[in-house]
Amino acid sequence: MALLTYPLTLEQFFLKLPISRSKFDLPEALVVSRTEGGDLITADQGPRLWTGQIDLVTMQHDEAPPIRALINNLRGAGKTFLVSDLTRPWPRFDPYGLLLTGAVPIISSIGATMREITISGLPAGYPLMAGDLLSFVTGTRYALHELVADAIASLAGVAGPVEVNPPIRLGAAPGAAVQLVYPRCKARLVPASSETGSTSNTVTTGVQFGWLQQLGGP
Image (cartoon, rainbow, N blue to C red):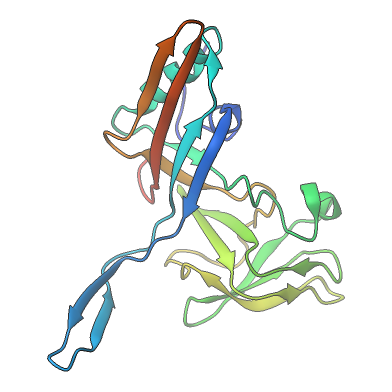
C-alpha cells in the first residue's frame, strides 16, 4: 500500500466516521473594545475559519482500531484532511445533487467587495438557497462558503451575484470549478482535542476530536 498523501480525501477519512454528533461552525474573529460611552467597537482580527467537533458512536472493539489509527495519524504535524457538513451535503432543493448530473458549475465572476459571487454552468432555472454551501479550489487552498440569500439560475444557467460567508479570499478567480455536492474544506485536528476513547467489556466509547480549517500547507 502506498503512503498516504494529504489532505486525506472525504472517502479516506471523514466519510468513514460513524458520527453520533457533530458541530460545524463559522465563528467570528473579532477584536472588541468599549468606548467611555459604552459603545462596542469591533474590528476583524483575522480570517474567519470553519471549525467543528466530531463525536463518534459507541463501537465494538473490532470496529474501533481502524478509526483510532487514522485519528492518531492525523495528530502529527502537517497532516490534513477534507471535511464536509453532513447536514448540508448538497443544495437544499436538490437531494443528492441529481439535477446537477452533466452540469459543470464554475465561478463566473467575483464582486469587487469579495462578498458576492456569480456561478455559471448550472441547469436552467436551478435554485440555490440561503444556507447552501459551495466550495472551490485555488492552488492548494480549499475555499468553503455559504450563501446568504437565494439565487435562481437564468435560462443560460447563471445564478447571482449572491452574497456569501465568509468573504472570498484573494487568489480566487473566475473559471474555478464549483463543488455543490459535498462542498468541503481542508482541516487539521485541533491539538490536544482528540480522544481515542475508553473500553468497557466489548465496546469503545468517547472517541472524539475537534478540527479547524487549514488555509495553507499540504
